[in-house]
Length: 381
Ligand code: OGA
Ligand code: NI
Image (cartoon, rainbow, N blue to C red; front, top):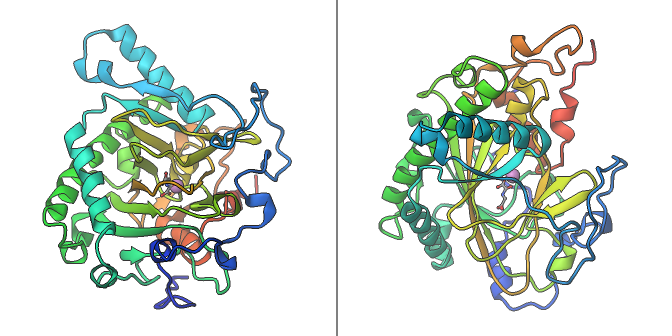
């Protein structure tokens, strides 16, 4: 059922241009239903939440709860000396994947200068005139290029953000002609950044495999191997918004792919992660990456690891830029729970499906919480 779509259902409006036009109220197509707005205290489902200390909400802090996602220092894993410390680091990664689906890593091996540079150059890209950016205008067919919406349903309520999307892996899909020529060093920096982040992703797959009790190359093989994995970069640009309480920069969703390695803005927070009935605002540490489990790892781990819902809030003072690198399985492989993790007591929770088939759903419908991965649950036990 490969469908694709050549054109957006409505004329594309750049959110950045709307924001720059100085309007004081946002157009109705960006106004979310009340239950989805950022200031609602609880999420709108019935899941009972784990008990966390409740703090009162303030105007600047939309989080319900004053805790951060786990922060994990990966240093011990590269120095290779202190075995006890390595074991502890592994355990912390395992716990974060099980309990949160999200964590920050520091001492991850990627050059801090490269991270800063990449974010700065992408900011410069978005600061350029629209005529120049429009040369890269994307279509829903591959999403590659400059875009302003996810999903093609006509009349959908849209998110308050623009983005640039590009393919990095496998090398056969990497087409630099589709990457911005300006600022001048951007292409070179994307290449270097992609290479480093792909290495980090490979290391994380190894850690997760070991933690799941699988061979350390299990997940990498299930993803198709180093040269075949998929890797895409989406650079998100969240413009200032005159009515941040009515909209979202990115609606609640789980990431459809394998794992996401996010470089957040260094000054402006906005990412919120769901924990039970609460939305936790992530406080990024300097030079850290935020890593999260995607739907495909949830499936391969037979739901031992969770791909957790998250969303982005915007604010009226500052634009925000983030670089989301999606580390994905080869797109035509069947993805299914690891045999080793399927037992009588815990049967396979998901039916096999290729990532190509899977991502069509989000490409057509846009972000929609965890509805998709849940629809994969096998009807037969
Ligand atoms: C994403 C995403 C979070 C952010 O791009 O899928 O969740 O902080 N981004 O921009
Ligand atoms: Ni996401």
